[in-house]
Structures are given as C-alpha cells and as structure tokens.
Amino acid sequence: PFEIELADGRVLTVPADRSALSVLAEAGLDILSSCEEGTCGTCEVEIVKGEVDHRDTVLTPEEKEENCSMMVCVSRAACARLKLDL
Ligand code: FES
Image (cartoon, rainbow, N blue to C red; front, side, top):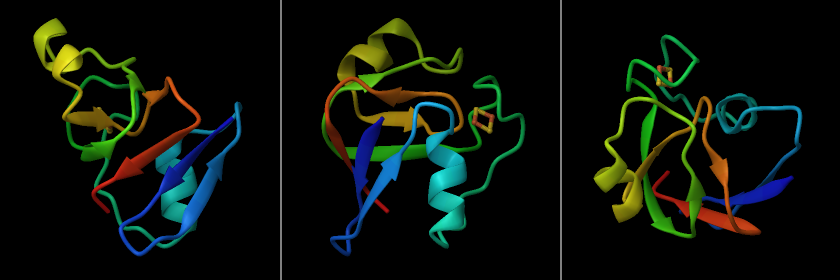
C-alpha cells in the first residue's frame, strides 16, 4: 500500500489490490480514463513530490526518469507517499 496526498491536504491510502485511479475516483476526483491498462495516456496526472513505480507503456524511459507525471490506472508509488497535482 501507499498514500496519495492531494492539493487540499487530504491523504488517501491505495491498497495493494486496488489502482490509484479507483481510489481517487472513490474520493470524488473525476479523472478521465480509457484503457485502464497503461497504454492510452488519458489518465496522466502530474506529480508534485515522490518517486513513482511507472508501469505504463505510454511514457518513454526518459519521461519515466524525469518523474513529472504518471498514469494513475496502473502506476504505483515507489515511496510511502506521493503528492499529486490534484
Ligand atoms: Fe489509459 Fe491510464 S487509462 S493509460
């Protein structure tokens, strides 16, 4: 599991068996999505702080290294808490 911190200070917990996208949607964040498999790029969200375990096939290796955005349908945190621009 890992945590997501929102711009309004709310902190959400993403369990191992759920996607960040589903947890964000449940919290009322209306994030556009399509494939939900990490291939289309629709659900891209900007990262404010934290390291991401990128699991999509949209971002190039360079973009993954830059750690500026993530696909919340499949990618997860590589740290305890991610702060997202939401
Ligand atoms: Fe397609 Fe996330 S919904 S990459």
